[in-house]
Amino acid sequence: MEQNDNSVNGEVTIGGDGRLSAFDIENETLHEQNDSGVTAKRTPIQWIKKYFLEGQALTTTQTQALERLDPNAPLYERLIVKHRRVLGVAIPCISLQLIWLSCAIKYDFWSLFPDRYYISITMIFGSIIAGMTSEGGASVAFPVLTLAFSIVPSVARDFSLLIQSCGMTAAAFTIFWMRVQLEWHSIIFCSLGGIVGMIIGLEFIDPNLTPPQKKIGFVCVWFSFAFALFLLNRYHKRKTYQTIPDFKMWKLIVLLLTGFIGGIFSAISGSGVDICSFSILTLLFRITEKTATPTSVVLMGGNTAVGFYWRQVIQQAVSVDAYYYTAVCAPIVVLGAPFGSVIGSHFHRQVLASFVYISDTVALVSAYAIVPLTNALIGVSVGIIAFGFLFFGLITYVGQKIMAGIEEGSEELLEVQINSEEDAKEKGMKPAANKNLNRKRKYEVHELDTLLKA
Image (cartoon, rainbow, N blue to C red; front, side, top):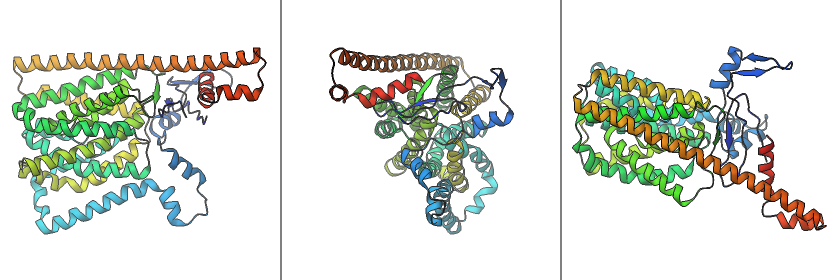
């Protein structure tokens, strides 16, 4: 088994393709032992390297291409392999900037900036956060526009769908181009569920909610998730997977339901399927944030495109203001989101999680300070947060049980291998016969043995 000891970076990462594969050893303590056995605190440089320069989780193909790259290779080959991230940002950015520039010249977008520049400034931060974390640009745009600038939630939602159709798809291209590790089960099945949820949410649920309900509901649900993720990450030595291990039918159904619920949230606020997928992957299936984050970006890019299509083509209800806001933000997000995805792919998973804590907490506090609260609305918000704590806590508990079952199964498989070898020795079997007896399990058990010894 290929093994990478990355204890300084601090994460156990186990492949999920049906058997255990390459992993890193989790060591989240804040101290390291020197040669004399005395514990010493990390230096500032070591701390920065650990949390902000961890390195990307790339696919095996890209990792091998980097290892085999000839220093004397032609320039175009070195650009595609070694400087892939630069091209990954430049290609979507330049392409979409040219499209925007042609439209700006034709329709005089320049005149829109004096009255809407504050939206452009907001999306500088929103697009970078969208690319870096599991939360789309709507996680910044929707609360800021509705709470700080008193924009109608339906307009903020339409703007979020429009702008993410630009920024998140650009970031998704960068992720594909850099061959960052993704969880494809989640992308496929959450997308299918998200399409249905988006349509049902736009047609039946969103029209029946009041603006204050949308604002409070949005921040309360995601604050509950952030708190659950915080509690989970207090277990520093927890093991994580790169992809969902031992994929079965019930996991497929869970992903479909996750996408469906996330699509409904996206129909209300412009963001939802990304954070729902992220929560299930990290809390239930224990996928590392370094895989779950780019997966959520790709998911949100596709889901917002569906939402924009339904609002514009089917309902024909996208407001003119949403288009104006998009016009002054598009050239920003097509650079900010891919740039954020590159930055985030190098950060430690706990740094990515910290962005979730901070943004969701700020949004909750801002909502309570700005939104006119009635007794009914306060009761609903408290109920949502309490239910969210219970729901996400339950998911975390079930995820721990699943992890324990996988580890127990691994130990049992190794024990069977050891017992079969002892039986073979007692019966005087030849090595060749013993090999034939265990050939179906040999590779898997070898990996398990290495893991347990580590």
